Amino acid sequence: MAFGFLLTQTSHAESAYANIGVGLLDTNRVDNIGIGPVFRMGYLFRDLSNSFGIEIEANPMRADLKDEDNNYYHSDRDMGLTLASYIVYNFEIPETEFTIRPKAGIVFPNLGDNVYHDSSSLGYGLNVIYNFKEDLGLYVGYGSFGTSVHQYSAGIEVLF
Image 1 (cartoon, helix red, strand yellow):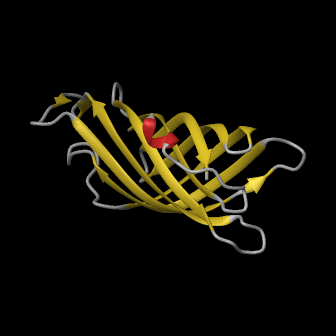
Image 2 (cartoon, helix red, strand yellow):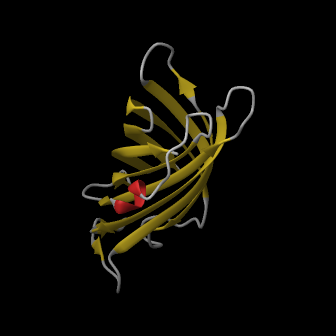
């Protein structure tokens, strides 16, 4: 958790952010769920609205995965990893503390060939953020890539 708090405080106009949370990765197969931390950093460009930006994400996870024959798939490592780069857009809901942030980009999964075969995939998702302070909030998120992989996450977001 120290990762998110080693940040300096500036106004919303600066629009850089980082968040840390817990994520679940579901591959649409019975018992094929991975769990682990989710780390994101992003920057909203200084355009007229401060709304367009970029985001990078890392999601290491521990998983007991099953293959196509519903057998447990074990290797020397029982860890999976997804890395991603997204374009985001911030929708700040007027007169509330909520922000909706859709995203689209490229995901680089490393989940083992028995689970997901492609080295990269188009990804998309949505985060909803509740800012209970000017520079601190809570988020819940959803992401998807390929035709069968979904990620659910929740955590804290720090603006700097």
